[in-house]
Length: 427
Picture 1: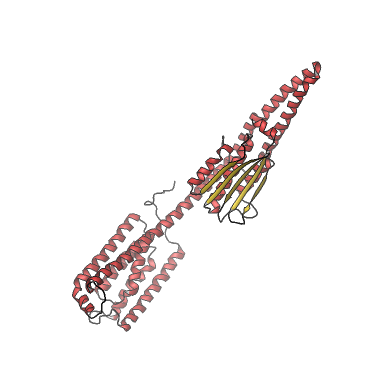
Picture 2: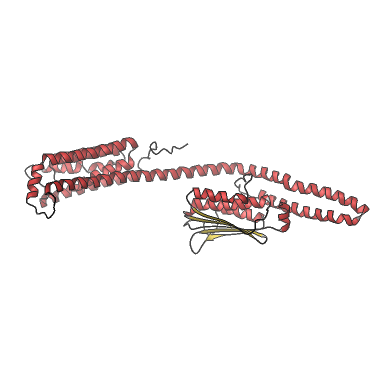
């Protein structure tokens, strides 16, 4: 059984394509850092010739804070620590390249949040790196307080707050934004992959359940038909035998009294043949169908609507017309048609709204299921669910319509006829 604990789940490692992408990214960012270094040196920005190290060391720090991104998804914890240490070391050595390096640091922290194999360790490590960065920022302000004040003395200011404290506070705000955004985005990326993994696991479980159900379907179908033969056909045949015996005796004494018995025999024969034809039609189905749960009938369709609501859909359910007593086979067929339609909506339609309507018309039961989704079965209707619905409708001499609506979404509409004789038999 898969684990759904968000803290225990381990994200699969990067693919070969992702590793190649990381390698090219690391090389590209390192080249950009070296280019940025030369541009900063040439422009004189953030460059202190008295304290800056030699050019070779400057290039070393620029590469050391960016090139490890080439392994960021294979070893996110090590890469985050290495880049953080090199970033602070470069500042201690007054290396002028900080423009690309700061984004490399953010990328390393983000990758640790999105790909860290151990969630608790990744969380503590990121918080530790961020705390060290703020500690180093505070120490820098304390060590170079006088230098900052001297550099700000020559600048013009139109604000109401002191220059130095405003610059210090602004530095803290910028770092809170950088690191806070990086931390949260890393967690969001990891959670998105975890949710996708959940959906894949649920889909796999559903496929396994469907395969197991298919293996039992043939046997279950025969058991169901045997039960219906005993409950329906055998009953009518037994009644016909009794009526035939009564008719034989009545013909010898009073032929007029044999008419009701003959009428009952005729009615019972038609009903038995009709039920037998339906069951034999289901038995001839080449593909196994989902088992008919005992007690699943049209009176339980509202339970399907309730389960769809629990799955997140906005469901409108309504029954129209005067409900009529229906045979179990027709009632079960109606239930299964609606159930399969709703299942297809949940699995394929990406819908937000579902409309289920049951209409009792004159001699006809109409089932209408519509959604506002983007998916649905293709125009040819070759999905196994629609095949099953067509089989159920055909058994009862009904009609089935399905397809995309012009206003958007998908519709399944089934009409199942029933006669007064059928209603009387059900009653």
